[in-house]
Amino acid sequence: MALDKRNHSNRVPVFEGNKETEETPQVQRPSRPPMKVGITHGDTNGVGYEIILKSFADAPMFDLCTPVIYGSFKLALAHAKALDMKAQFNVVASANEALPGKLNLVDCVPGDVPLEWGKVSAEAGHAAYVALERATEDLNAGQIEALVTAPICKESMKLSGFKYVGHTEYLASVSAEGQNEPLMILQNEMMRVALATVHEPLQQVAGQLTQEKIETRLRALYQSLRRDFLLSSPRIAVLALNPHSGDGGTLGAEEQEIISPAIQTLVDEGVPCFGPYSADGFFGAAMYTHFDGILAMYHDQGLIPLKALGMDSGVNVTAGLSFVRTSPDHGTAFDIAGQGKADAASMRSAIYAAMDIKRNREADDEAKQNPLPKLYHERREDSERSRHTLPQEKAE
Image (tube, rainbow, N blue to C red; front, side):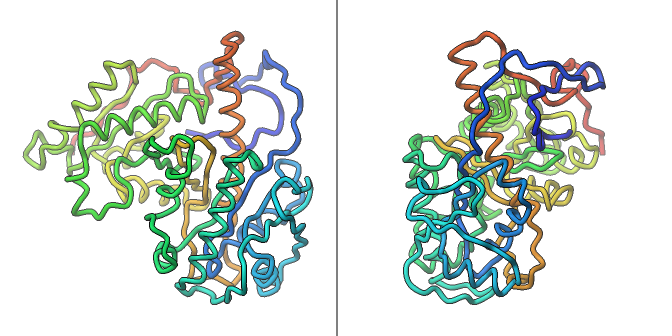
């Protein structure tokens, strides 16, 4: 499966069999200025500034968006100097003052925060929180159009008094749709994986799973695939919890008692979801290529194969929020912080994804207001094929 990457033209891909052709879009929209994207600096002892600066080292990035960094001017300069990177910041008091073609920076972190490469500290955690808080305020006020968050250290955030587990939980609390439980979706060029449980310890996962939770996650994933990725009829695979899908209940009853009934409920609602599939056979046989989204039961079940197959281009998308938020699919990389070794590919992918999702939501809103002409265009050549040819999981 090839997920949507850069599309700088206004063509619409249309799949006929195995061939991709081009057709003129039915709707011509006026060109818009570069999208204003907010970017938080993350943990200041990690690689956040490095991957931000590397992402905008190429001038064409400024043709795509107007970046607004939320952080500390002093720390930004310190990172650039230590890494021997050229950077000219346009320091602004608010995102409203951001200029196209400039590396804008809202200097919102007060005081002198020590730069201590690779170190867990309350000061770095507090600096990350202040930047995040200011960015979400501007996001809700409409001063920026989408948010990309650089990696944070959860331990540092906790030391600073941050009361949330991580980004996702905090963003849910400040979203206009804050009563909705957010859905964590990780994607790369080969797959999209959503999580039924997120950061729960493994020994608690089975107890956290309920039929209602799985149904809620599946509905959220289906709606995100339609709205955020403009897939008209997305297919979803659901992974099992136990080895061999429970083997008829001999290795666990969750598949029979919780997961399968949840799948059936969604099928009855018209949502094309399938499973439960044993994770080892599902990924080993590359069955993920036949689906637009995957619901994994726990964190490592879904993220190990995703990162093994495409670590550098991974993106974290938080669905279910009133605004668009993405982030690189990696952590603070304390082990290489300050060494200039960080790869910015995931950050760039996160910026691209944020812009794509924002535009897709605008197109979805327009389609709902004016159903004709149809604005959904399937991006995968096999997504609209007969669902009667789904691969069968190989017996072990």
